[in-house]
Image (cartoon, rainbow, N blue to C red; front, side):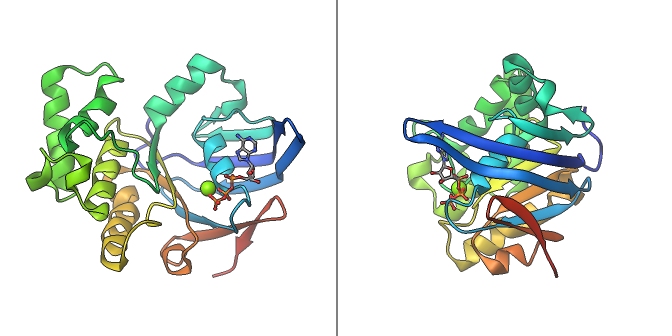
Length: 231
Ligand SMILES: Nc1ncnc2c1ncn2[C@@H]1O[C@H](COP(=O)(O)OP(=O)(O)OP(=O)(O)O)[C@@H](O)[C@H]1O
Ligand SMILES: [Mg+2]
């Protein structure tokens, strides 16, 4: 399932509309994108432009309503509930702006929890979570709960967690939105190293032009379309 250098992504004619009590809310229309395996891609766009919606479709949280999304040769439109859940678990790692850690668990336990869902045994879980926390520079914070971690540390735990099941695609939704400059730099350094270090393709949503500038390719969501941003 995992290509060594991440997965390539082909989005063709993707449209997405939310049904609401006030009527349909069209968010994406005929979105096209081609992302090479191992690329780091930044998606920008104003609030409400549909960035999170696009990540949700790429990550199998929403099924493509129209058009096709092919990730590493797998057409997401062909997957149903269980198939999508398996795709999320085996292929995708998510990183969110608010970290999404469980407050009652230590850093170590937060990372181990992701491995529990993959059916990995207790000892192997502990070993892998320890190695991942070492890799993000948090060996000394393993037993800390999120309330006792800084924002930058929390996001590094979240990156360790996202990597737990060896994803070939990491989706990061405004991962530096709550961080100061030095923590932003640390987190960004880790995310941009993922293709080389862990063989992931990375799609990064950001409002920050300096963060976007660090990606290999930039796209902007505007008027429901995804447009390449020239370098
Ligand atoms: N579950 C939903 N049901 C109905 N409408 C939704 C739903 N999720 C998002 N929307 C609407 O779709 C549009 C796009 O939302 P989305 O969250 O993708 O934007 P975004 O670009 O991520 O914005 P932000 O930068 O503020 O996070 C918004 O107008 C939002 O109100
Ligand atoms: Mg969003």
